[in-house]
Amino acid sequence: METSLLREFPLLLPQNLQKTVYEGFVSAQGRDFHLKIELPEDLQVKNARLHCSWQLKAILSGYQHILQQRMQHSPDLLSFMLELKMILEVALKNKQELHAPPPPQYYSGLLQELATLGWDKLAYMESSFSTLKLKAQDASGREHLITLRLKAKYPAEPPDCVVDFPVPFSVTWTPQGSLGSIHSQFVAALDSLKAFWDVMDEIDEKTWVLEPEKPTRSATARRIALGSNTSVYIEVDPRHPTMLPECSFLGADHVVKPLGIKLSKNIHLWDPGNTLLENLKDVLEMDFPARAVLEQSDFTMDCGICYAYQLDGVVPNQVCDNPQCGQPFHQICLYEWLRGLLTSRQSFNTIFGECPYCSKVRQLFLTFNRIGLGFSHEF
Image (cartoon, rainbow, N blue to C red; front, side):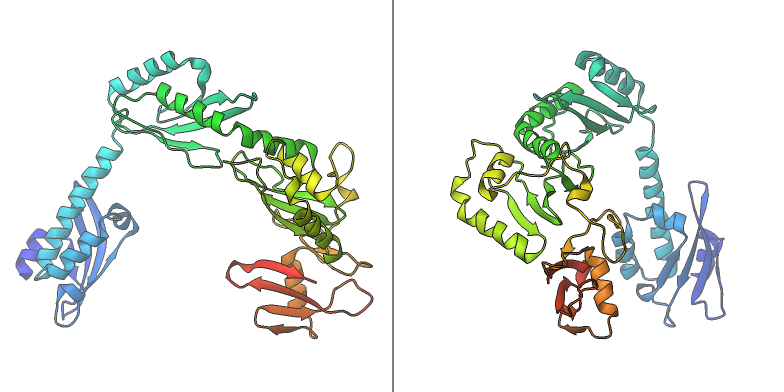
């Protein structure tokens, strides 16, 4: 077996007298790939350890289960190495086919499809013709893009489609499909989401949105300023955008509790025929601060610990409940502050301590989920 192994794999050599460690190269399609094999004392391949170079590991990334299976059933190292070389040959061949340039008819067919669709619908095309972006407007005049990543066997295989939608978007595809059919489905999806985007645009235009700072078309949540260090976080259902959204009030208890009571008391006033913003105004019995009327400083303050408004894209969302204090904090800043106090104490996942700003000593506690530091709070 030793002679046959040397003949078949002359670049793979034993590294010790016991011949339990082999290191060297395996050749395939004119290329050499480094590897190392560690055998147990009984030389059983099923208990061996295979170490590959990063190039070899990348090529064999989709074949690990086959390699493990062949390692379990190979009677000796030579048999396994022959199996490994065969798998490597197949992997290299598939990789070459995957990256092979498409035939000329791919390009001519694609250009013909674009001409039929209309060049005005094309927003971008990569030089290799493998990625392109098509554009369309919804009924409210908003422009949207769909990114298409074409495969070498297009149109036999559907392209990958990427859109900025709040709901999944899947394309119905047949071998006779075209860019025109994708664009038509894209436009139909835009029409189905028009009401959702109308709702979100009204919120963005007529209220002061604290988060996200630059919302995408797929964003379904908004944190809206209500007053001094008080806000409401809403999650809108894109399929039913005028229905009551999930609402969470953020701020001091003496401010947000009355708002929660109003929401519960006036829930019967919610009218799906009105816009979401109009309904929120009715049930909360208030007008929302608007960018055209107020400055950000009129209803927000910097974190009382780090003295910044934004920290890693997050604005202060913890507020001291003392009416004479009302200082806001970033949740991570407050957690670090409380954790560093000698007088603070912890019970399970709750920390008790003192507000950094109150002149009167009082008890604060911050509850948090240890996994991911997903905080909630009470003061």
